[in-house]
Picture (cartoon, chains in turn brown, orange):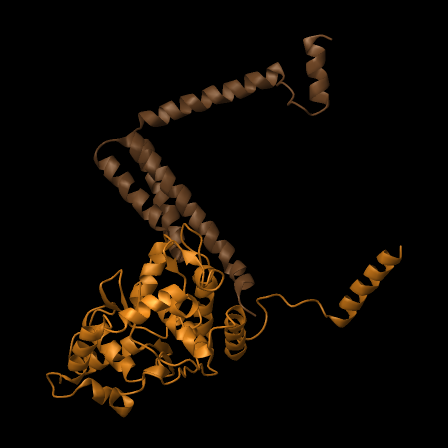
Length: 124
Length: 284
């Protein structure tokens, strides 16, 4: 039995994952490269990129404050982002601001979920 | 086929009678029912712990910690601050009046009724609030509500209620019930990056280990405040502990005298109704 036939049978039996078709492989590689370039661009860092990131992060944190559920790591990430920007390290500052925004969004989601979820924990 | 018919019939009956299960959020606030369920849960969970012993927190549920605590209490670490609190309480203000003039029974043996709801202001009043209100009324500046002289004065006042049973009331006033419900919601709501509620530790993990500590059951949790904490190295108020707890789950804490912490104290102290006041206390 040829190697390709053995592989086909093993794939059919579920023993191994099917190899990616070449078009899909190209797409995955292409996306990977694109992400790599985007990461490189982000790593370069600009004042404008940081300004946009910190604005979004602070808006999200303000929203979290309205839900009375802010997280200390968000505050720390914002503080670190401001410090990095002050040191003109906009790549690091942007990354920290984006991290802060992600944390703030999670805290908002938690607060929204707990608006009803807490009832299930009440002793009855 | 019979199952399908039965299911359809059951649904039809529900629709006709309107007997659909009520959502968890439905219904009027019922603090008395909450109190019974709350206390029954801990009595069932810790059947060997006498009811009054819940005021001793982790020492009620762990023999090793209790043995250490009994040794510690040969010379309670809060004694000096308690003595200072008595002195401060008895010292007259510049206008010649004293703390005793602000409270019924001259402030002696009254701590078991705090917090209470003030119908005039529509606010929950904690003992710490009342002490500061007394100072302001008599032309003195407010004290820090977390530690220092405030914790010492509160510790002395609480000590004069030692053994009296908590008797916190929730009047049938929508504002009082709203405050109670807000405190209850806070107690059961998860917050912070660690996604913990007060109940995550003090209900679901009560009596279990958290690193070197034993987590105190929620029943009796506030009965020993103000407390001397080894971690603090001095005596502190319940507001101080709330701030610390929130920070520990990586949530931004509120001010120790914030409305939400007052509501939380209102809920938790009401849950301790019937237990003896045991403060000041000591904890790891």
